[in-house]
Image 1 (cartoon, rainbow, N blue to C red):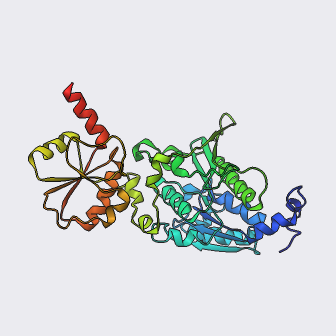
Image 2 (cartoon, helix red, strand yellow):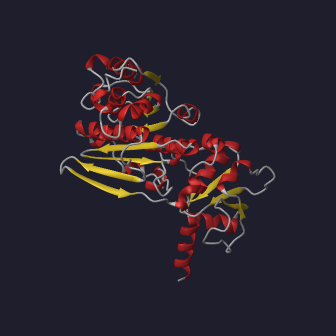
Length: 371
């Protein structure tokens, strides 16, 4: 390692050759070589991070060039991961660059992420963010979060214990994904080109602080920067235990989790309203399965049901069930819809439905009727 290249940071008080050696031995994975990934990759490479992985299956487009500064017009149409790898290798030929020109999904995320010390999330959609978060939780890898839209951006650090031993993840910040219609994308809403440069650089900064063990990382914290007012806002993220069930507990559950469906990118017609459920319950042959954990409130004593928690639904068999309709219920309809997705893969010929709004909506509806 050429120490002269890094002399200006080695002479910093509290940094020195020891911290530089830690960077040289580190392996950082950057997921997304776009607006956030480009500046992060440049600064991580320049700082001397020994191994950098780049995951991106997209190609360079003209609309990228105002903010994705690794690329030029001659790169349009080329794969981003391979192009970014070539550019940062020219910046620093002494480091190793791993390019993955593939879509990160349930089948490859754990295998790829397992090879790195920490992960920098430069993605631009909720499905991939939840997937990356869950993989990092399962593998116990620190995750550096970033997001931008219009004139505002965010950065933070997840899955890294603070001084008190507290560790949060992306689901604690966003327990449930918003509807796609409620969240405009950069493609539709726009973004000022310098903003992802600022946020991506902040993400790289947090990565260097964590690896070199200097300063105070944004552990369990998120900062928001508004480029128009030039103001930073900081807030703390705390564990949201009631949503922990949503994080896959093992690699098998992770492989089965449909992130596109979870983020409402895939719609189905297998939800029923509480009124439709009551009509089926009174006039049809049904079996009701409560996919909540045992003992969750409110209890169900108004009709017969069996309790099969979501984590066990994959192993549950309805082969011998004679009921014409299998109704899945939970607290709000989210878990039952997930269970529906799992069960329909096994029993495509059976009529399996999810109660929209869950038992909470059912009780609210029937309470109003009684009044």
